[in-house]
Image 1 (cartoon, helix red, strand yellow):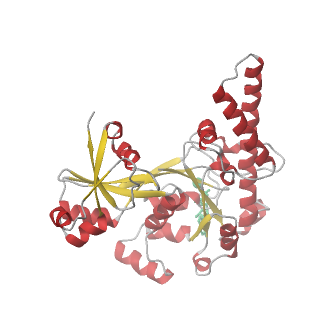
Image 2 (tube, helix red, strand yellow):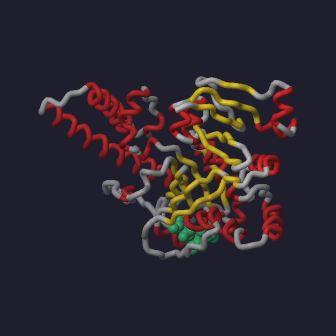
Image 3 (cartoon, rainbow, N blue to C red):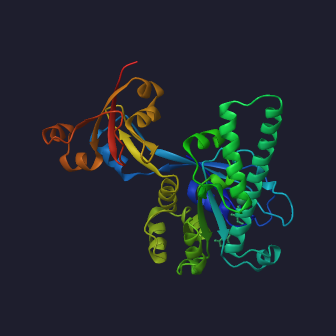
Length: 357
Ligand SMILES: Nc1nc2c(ncn2[C@@H]2O[C@H](COP(=O)(O)OP(=O)(O)O)[C@@H](O)[C@H]2O)c(=O)[nH]1
Ligand SMILES: [Mg+2]
């Protein structure tokens, strides 16, 4: 999973990135824009820890999420949106939009629309505008192709999809709110439209502000966004403490989970991802797959050969193995199943793929 941290300048993206990744990238009010910072965060799934205790494998591999911390993006009024063109931003599957709600008079003056809801509107507009430019440019090219006699079925599907998208964007709506036919979806996937990506809105609050939910959170949720409040600076300071000290401060703030655990969970939710596991003497490992995927898709996450030569999946649930203690007991209880290609993988499934290539 690759996730981009985006937002206006000085909203606390790098502060939150540091808290998440344990890195120590300088946060500075006036740092110049540069490349994205990249950090990998391990998804510390307790279930993997338990399975590792049970199987005592040589290697234990958790899933991870790659966070890309981009320089500030700001929509300047009246100008064509160009600031979303950072290389790499499109390869991220989802955005975490960091908006500032901690008080800062200087920043308030610098950006007249600093208020979180207005700032969100800016970003929505900018994404929609960028997508319109992309769709229009491609449509022009398709038209040119038609004139030269290039009119395949595939191009016609693409054209139809793009026209629908353009119309939708012109109504100032994001592509994620448009339901597309799977064929259309496939035809436009390569464009990586900004407004089609899932967004998690993180409101960066002061320590004091954290204690009361900001009213904007309800508004974000009403607009259909997944959202949460984070005291960024506090979280970064926490990451420098030992775990006992950190726990004490977290308790004071009423926080029960680390920022990593909270954000990684939200990212799974945002992208509709679930975890399945493989176990054995060599390795206990977590894998990530889109909710609703069948056993063949899951097998393909492990290796394409496993999908290609898929015969069956041996399957049992994490809860069952922790309850009954061993695979032998599971078999006696009839909880060790053989599943076919169409089996829909469930969160916490432990799979072993039988295959033949
Ligand atoms: N008071 C306060 N300051 C913050 C908070 N988060 C970030 N800052 C400060 O805001 C400035 C910009 O932070 P940074 O993380 O670099 O923002 P970015 O431009 O969005 O990456 C730095 O001086 C931070 O110390 C916060 O939660 N509270
Ligand atoms: Mg930054």
